[in-house]
Image 1 (cartoon, rainbow, N blue to C red):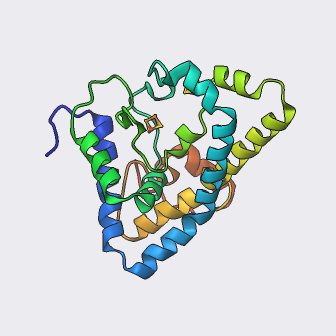
Image 2 (cartoon, rainbow, N blue to C red; image 1 turned 45 degrees about the vertical axis):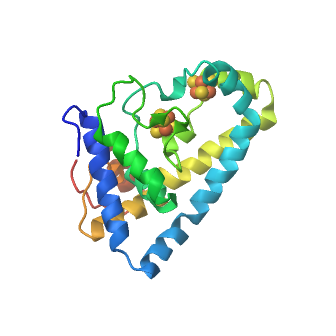
Length: 214
Ligand code: SF4
Ligand code: SF4
């Protein structure tokens, strides 16, 4: 049962989460496999990104934030999640982590930090892309230093991330929303179909427009 004191952010996140789970449960194995296949390049990107972050950022973040449990990256309630983030996470998660995530959205968050932050860290199996790509100035300065090679690699990751979600061409995040829209679902997190700015990007790129409202 949902705690009456959950905030609007939690309610919006929960609605998207439940919609995604309901639809995924309704799929036959062939359609689910097709979705898994569609996200495979993205998961490869995320694994490569995680290795890079582990090599260059882990020590910096541990010293700066984790040792005193500041988790400064996750100290804001209301991080942007795309609808596709939820789809990908649900496809990659076992039942228990998903149930834990659902439970966090159903009770009041009085931590002053991100609702998804647990004592063990983020409870997403595949963190939202915005989170995965966030590096504070301090971590960038410390981890990248003056190494042009590392900075160049990071720029390549930024470009790769854009290729999955920035609709100046057909992108995975748009395609995943469209699959759910075609199945009759709507979510306020479908930014690639309801954000005026992103719709303009699609229009300029000559991509088909299907606005589903906020
Ligand atoms: S990126 Fe910056 S704010 Fe985030 S955990 Fe690392 S040091 Fe802390
Ligand atoms: S979703 Fe996870 S990684 Fe992102 S801010 Fe929340 S706890 Fe941190």
